[in-house]
Length: 274
Length: 212
Image (cartoon, rainbow over all chains, first blue to last red; front, side):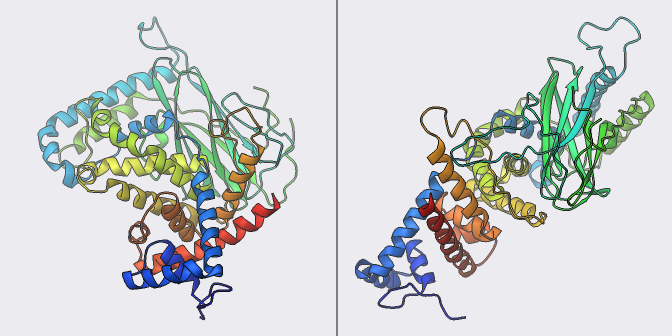
């Protein structure tokens, strides 16, 4: 393959060489040679100026802030994710018996919370235990196609307050599917996790974020998204208070709260209303 | 909630919890502790926060921003950031002793982002969400948004590894050697990714910028 060269360069310098010079990745002799040449070569100077301009644009791009939820989600994962045995072996010896006890206690607490959360009370409840059953109403919705339109700023779509949804939209490959989990009856004062696992044609989508987790404190609407690349039967399983693992591990169906199924169709018909 | 129009939606209610099921689970966990997996239960719920939070706070914005640039998806950036930091926590004793734990984080984040993109059959979305914090109300946000959108699309058109190489070099100041390490490739290959990515980005970005 012939080397691509800088147009109008008096030395026909390869683009790769000028780019490497720009990155400070040439040896000393080459750095000096290319530097001296670039000072006087209009073609190389123009290209370097373009590199600077493009690089500046990249640096000025402002990503969104991660938000406090990220730390909360990472914290939740601490409990369930095992640490590297090499780094924890010594401590595990110390904790050996205590760990078993702690695990039982931890699960017992979880048992008490979840059991009470999901089971209507039969008698006078303890003051600290919420009594209402948790109800998760998941709906999958196409979009929102949050789209930047030049000179018209739009931020329409689903947010935590359930912004309007386009009822004529379809589930199509490449479209972002939003799953809105409306959590009602979650005991307040405690953090609860809502975990969603996405499937296509009965198989795990096998791509992050095939499993996503969010935390709620009491009742809330939370949403999850996934872009289905292909047509098929989409499915999302929603788990309540499943021990958070990682985004690549599957939660147990013991914590399954609801399942939502939808069709992703190539040019499918408009979604029917009922 | 007036969302009954939604199609083909079926919900299956939570199966009732049974004491038997929980009892079995408790027994299973208890019996595994002796020689089972290396699951660590913290003696104090505050421990992860104390030892890990300063490290997390130092790097969260960079890692999240980097993953957002690579995936063009805020939710994916969130999930992959979470996975990156969970892995960091798993190996924290080692990582915190490194001279450059930041490089380790970027390497893990890069791997996760590349795997994420490999699993997607569709090209990266060119839509972007309005970021009120980055684009505060007041003044005319249109030029800034248009500029960001342009960068987003030009970057999204690059092959994933070129995109990662260019962002690491131009935005996060990685050297070519560090780019090679993050991408787990040779120095020569990293240089090639850089110049090809830079050229492709330059052409797309500058051509479209002129039309703004």
